[in-house]
Image (cartoon, rainbow over all chains, first blue to last red; front, side, top):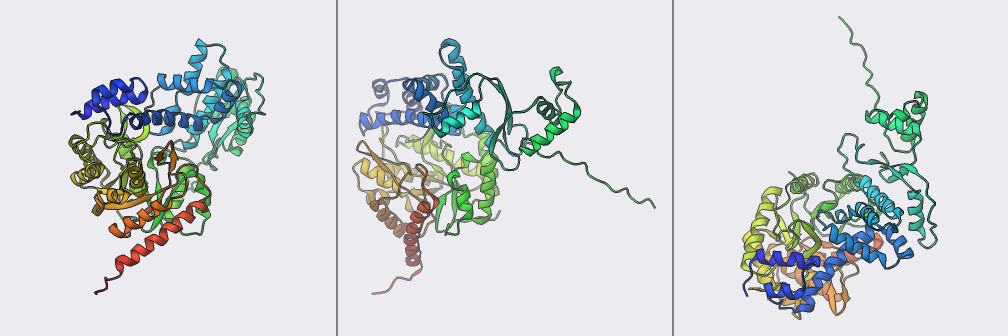
Length: 249
Length: 283
């Protein structure tokens, strides 16, 4: 049976994605000389790869879901893969849309805890800030993200990473958070800024300060900025070059 | 550009070993990276890579180029890859003789092509294009495959040979893959090794595998088995002391365990080097 490459790829894509069964694929492409059992192993591998990527990217979320609703994890992954076929070059890209997917799913299934999508978002942005490019000026923009969560997510994630069975689900508690790559040590961190810290960040970014924060006294902002530098959120502000006056002849 | 030619036995640079490898005083001849982890990324991995590249030659071994696939080679990524290779002064680039992506959907695996003339022409043209765009030679790896795709008109050895010859590129000879494929398909590993275009070998890979459901799976997750060590020695006797990479990419142990395996490979490699420089004794 002569099959063109175009035919081959047009059949393999839906087959590997689980959208087309083996019988239909074999009907068009012909049988594999290795037999159906070996040929179909590639579909197993394709799904297994995505499960592995998501397991590694979202280990704390997976631990929580398995602990609380064991059968749900596989359902979530399969629904997610179907809704978001993986396309990015790096395997991590396969997990990029999980937070968004979970939020959309909760709209349809309100019994799904909101904390799932917040954990997923935190896991994702923690990875992103770690690996953000270096060459964006001082690397400031993409190595720092600001979030408002409904729970103390970093602490809960740390507890899940330490011992999922012992990690107690936190009570709702709105938290504003900087998730960032330490400007010098380069590891991912989180920091809860004060109002003055938010103003300090806006000032450094050259952004307008929101009206609700305009009453923060400037000296508080200076102190907060020093704290952000101390925690590695901000690099020390560049000092203006000191120039000696030129001697006039 | 000054080429940073690898020699001897290298290991993969993995994030689990970033700190340990910078401290080690054990022999590491060269390093291999997965460039997808660095192109377009910054932070600690780039800092570690910069430090390591000051100490060792670094070769990039890609996993996502999908050289046999239907999608165009990715422009921005190839440009970024070329810049990385320039920074590393890498004399060549390696990737896999496979496809990974169809119509923008990435399967994150090294998937086998049908062994056909059309696939040879298609893949060889893309390898030539990649060599032009990277401005350096490319070597492609013989992959492990668990099934022959439908409609083959040639064997794996004939397919790899035809692609490499038509592309005028190098072969990254993966000895473990030769062994895994032969075992899975009921063939002779040595015969399959010899069916490959060994004269084009630019680099060798060796690794461990696991058995699952009666099938050997190329996991790079454990020590080599004796038959693969023996096949490696056989390969070196045919291709000479080609730079060799000890791969360990899953269930990654302490650095010293990986370096112990690399030491074992280096002993075999040095014997091959000695034999290649010793004139044959006349009878």
